[in-house]
Length: 335
Ligand code: AVI
Image 1: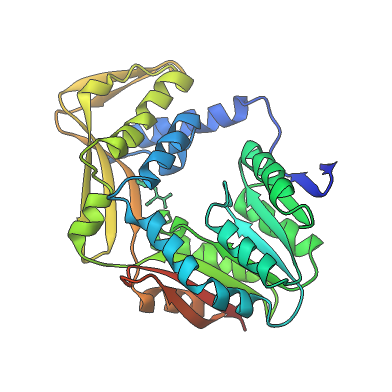
Image 2: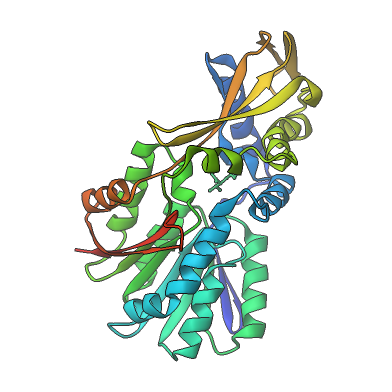
């Protein structure tokens, strides 16, 4: 579906339903996750309106270094990044999971200053975010050609391959790769590669392995914003699936495994209890101190991330780092 709103175009490839299919899939996943041992819930359900608002608050926390670090990477290296992107003339700048494009705007500004020849293709599952971004860019860069795509990653990548024939520079920023399991992350990078052509570029945001205390603090802030973000998953089940979770009876628990390089988040049941969910008509039993695993945030060494890119069919061009060498935007080229 195409909506012409000059000068930006909104391409909506999202699955159209009244929400009942999404609710049924959510209920099925929750029921499966709470019935297995150990229990788990997927972090992809964090991001309803409330969860997205809490994530915005997390990004502003002093302990959550990731967003500032990547911002600093782009600020320090934007001139070199833009020169690398535009070295072979016109390109499509594709922004996977663009959201409000807070960090990408630094690159857009630099591209505009250097008068580079490109167009911008933000992609996100949130239609509201893409409309807001389109309107916003229309004000700031009335000359910029923007095609905002509302789609899940793979649908968006397919559209890209079919509809955009010129050279592409794909951004996947924000350490979003870290929320995939290692194998899934590898598969995802491979999928990106399969939708690109030799000469295309891929800029990947990677939170690097560092002092475990620094990482742990980022996911365990004393003000409890991360705890509220994690617990919102239970509130969401209450709101959307008719659950009766008592939020006081669960607590957020986070731990970092420095050998595996993974930050793990849990919700721990503070007592023996049963929770009922209208959507399934079933009860789920919790022993005292039984935990639900809710999120993994994988950290990478530069070497691990480079290897992943190589295995997927990319060649590492360079790694742009922040001043503490704690976060990298790694530039790969399709070979
Ligand atoms: C979205 N993602 C990269 C965040 C992360 O760091 O794993 C989500 C998050 N979870 C807790 N705090 C932030």
